[in-house]
Length: 270
Image (cartoon, rainbow, N blue to C red):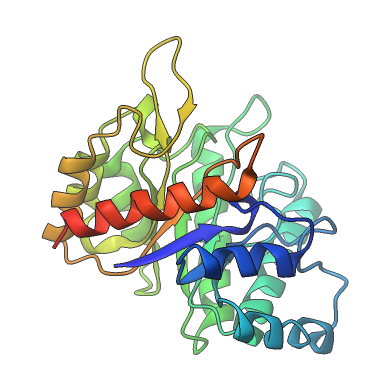
């Protein structure tokens, strides 16, 4: 397996600072955030401006993927069809950016269920958009990986597996976040049921229960022994990418601790 880390999990004032820290602490690659005007890559950047980042990645660590589009602010399941189209257009641009930077995957938040968007409608709109995205990305070699997030949809591994299978494209799978699932299920069970559909993994840790919350990796209630056993059983050998906040003080040390923790997890899977 490989070690990844989200760019936002790295301390540093500039992109170069963050990438140099990732290299110094032993990560194989980083994952970029959403495609918005606050991001490392913005929708207004030209292809040439995106390519201008390549020497920096080459001198430090590559980007293995990014969060596609701006899915929380411009969701694929918005009630307004113009907003849905804008969300899809941003994801189309993410495909172009990922290809320019040599990435292998895009993280997809499929949509949001809320007072204005019914579950069954969100399911339909999300599948429709992801099918279009899969067509748009065909031939790029990109994996489109749907993450389990707090969006009130795809709440079981059986439903998530069905959602992916109904899309019917081999490059569409799951981006399984081990920590996100603790509130509604058991990560090892999800891994076993999703199986080969899992294309990428996010690692984080949490304490369960009403007083629970985010904690340093390996300090929470994720059953890491069972998680790694199931990842080994399905033959997973790609990135374990940390999505964890930095320390308030001595921020660089958080990356070093995350790196050592992932080393322990990878070592336990051999």
